[in-house]
Image 1 (cartoon, rainbow, N blue to C red):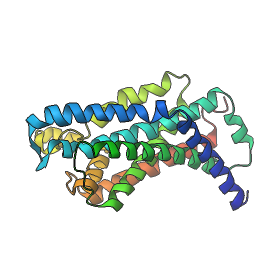
Image 2 (tube, rainbow, N blue to C red; image 1 turned 45 degrees about the horizontal axis):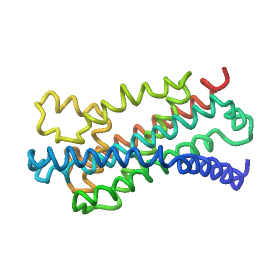
Image 3 (cartoon, helix red, strand yellow; image 1 turned 180 degrees about the horizontal axis):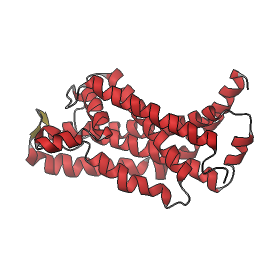
Image 4 (tube, helix red, strand yellow; image 1 turned 120 degrees about the vertical axis):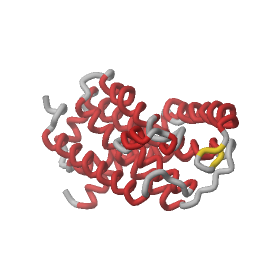
Length: 257
């Protein structure tokens, strides 16, 4: 398959994914916007005013990066897991598999679609946050890079979940019992410096901690984790999950049974 044809195939999948979540924007974009607004009102204004400063910053300013990234993570993941599983369920994934489209292009198209939704929702949540706080981004390059890399990572994770899923119930198990706990324990609402030494060490096993701190560094210029280490962890997980996704796609796991 020629490079131009591969580009057309990638663009087609990506366009389909973008149109898919754009058509139902009331279900894909509005809910995270409302949820984040509630977080700002309850944790930022009501509770935050009593907590005071966190690591030298107003509490509402401190939690903004985590809330934005949480929306990015959730939406990048859910876009891919729901879309690819639907393709399996409706039996039109076979059309892509028997076509000359390389598996890498198929995977890249779905991941790019997840990244697009994650970034879109992230922008919406960022705009909302400006109504509650004077958000000043310290480093635009690092902030944008962390968002894209994090969305890529969780889009790949959503793809893996979709491949193994055998029912619509299966696509909600990982977000409910794994993703949500790790996100809330990833330092969104607190600095790990507040934790006892044992729990500080235990928190380092949570990969989302590195993403949130890297993004907080880009927004506020503060982080509990060395920024170089944070990027290294993110990139390692991206490579591992994409390699795993490619292996599953090449072997037809859950697709050719």
